[in-house]
Every structure is written in C-alpha cells, then in structure tokens.
Figure (cartoon, rainbow, N blue to C red):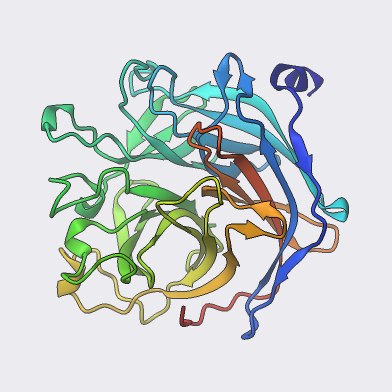
Length: 372
C-alpha cells in the first residue's frame, strides 16, 4: 500500500463540516453524505493519467473496480482496482489505486491507441475473476468504420470472452431517426442478486422520441434484463425521465425488481458544478414488457415506478458536485447502515474532478411513483 502511495502521490481526504440527510415524507430511505474525496488532476499510475472514471463496482473481498472511458486516443482503454476506506465518524474517505488492467479484444490484443474503437462506460463484477463492461462503441456514417455499442464479458487479463445480444434500440442505425444516439447508449449496467444483467440507455433511441419531444420534455428510456448464460435479452421496461434535460448515467441493482440510478443534467458547466439526482425505481406486476415494441410512441405501456431519493444541486453541503457516472455498494457500517459510493468522470479535464462521494443508507425501500 505504501508503494502505491509513492507511485500516485497523496490522495485528498476531504472532511465535511456537516452531515447531509434526506428523509422522504412517504417513508423512503434516507441518504446521509458521510465523506467526499477526489483524485488530483494529473495523477498518474504506471505512466498513465488517472481519469475518465465512469463505472464502479465492489468486489466480494472489499476492493473496487473502476473503468476509465479513455477511448484509445493515445492511451489504452483500461480499468483499475481501488481500495476505498471510510471514516464516517470524521466524515472522511480515502481512495487508493492498487492495480491497472488494460482491456483487450477477443484475440487477447490491447485495443488500438491511435484511434477510438471502444468507449468503456460501465463495469460490474461477473463472478470469479470475470467482469462485465459496456462500451458505447464509435458512431461513424461509414458502416465499415462504425463500432457498435456492446456489453462484454472479459477475463482477468481484460480479454473479451463474449458479447451480449443487444436489442436494436441500443445499436447505431442512422444517428438521426433510428437506433441509438451517438455517445448516448449503455452507461448504466447492473447485476442482480441472481446474476441477471440489466442495462439502461443514457438517452432514448430515436424511434422512442415523441414528435413533440424537446428540451425539458419527458423522455422514455429502456431498461433491459439479460440472461447471464445466453447473453440474450429477457425483458424490457420503460424508464421515464420526466425532465428530459437529465440523462441516465448509472444503474445499481437493489434486487431483481428495484434499482438505483444516477440522472444528471447535460450539458453542464464544470466550473459551477453539475445538477444530479439519485433515483429509486421499480418493476411491478403492472409494468409493461416492451421488448417487442419497435417504437414506444406506438406502444401504450405502464412504466417503471420512480421516486427521487436525493436531489444534488451543483453545490451540496460544501461539495461541488461533478459529472456523476459510477455507483457501487460499500461496506456495512458498525451501526448496520449500508453504504453507497458514487463516482464522477472528470473527462480528463483539469476543471473537473475524479470525485468520490460516500453515502450511508437507512430505511426501507418504497417505490411509489412521485411527481417531479
């Protein structure tokens, strides 16, 4: 651990002057901010800059995986192994980089570094030494140069073992009227307690936009469940975002019917902070399966339930909120509360932060639909 600290320098641990707790009037769980920290811009590990952290997951042994959305523009796409220590009594946390793993193609070769190919966005532990990770691919009007979005399973060396079968709304078509929107596909990836894999698109597919959709209008995303053995889609549900200026940047399974997600406003001004919120959503017996629906405006459907669990303004309890894109469960606290770690992608921008926030969770799950 001391060697790691010498390699990357000091990682800041920020104390919070006051705790922050949000209690839902209808009995929803509460989140208390118990720590915040960031990795200083320019910090390097094994010769490469640390940044672009856009997905986070906790391993059974207590360490974490964080994927970087470095697109191969001079640097290899990769993910990190982290140690995160919490000190809730003093409202502090610390993040240490322990290891780095380059992502590889199906032949075991590192992806090119002279041009973008994959765009890593999310990572989840798949059991054993395997991982799932998602890529938004690379849109190009020339089909021969286009790389489709994907969900991959990879081994401990980063080599791709297989790809999941994605529904058409997650794939590029013309980037105008059909299919996925460029750089707006699978940022949210989750694994349920039974191993089922879930994904949600960052912005809706073009065919799922209503004619009157515009800035601030409600948007309809699709959350899809996948069979972890075959990689094929099982079910698909409408995930509503009442205010379309928010996009969906992460998904975390509570169980196989309830999820946490991050929604954040885009575009944003990194100098003033990013407006974001944490949502708890649910699949009920009434929620419509839309897997066979070609375009949501033509398919009447009951969407998933949703409740705003925590609103995060640009400045929250003395912390400037950055571009939140990763979320993972943390350890249990001595008082029994579950913790949750949220991570921000700095886009390798000196005006942004590779930020980590720690929250303590108390209360039972309620997923009644609420007005925004």
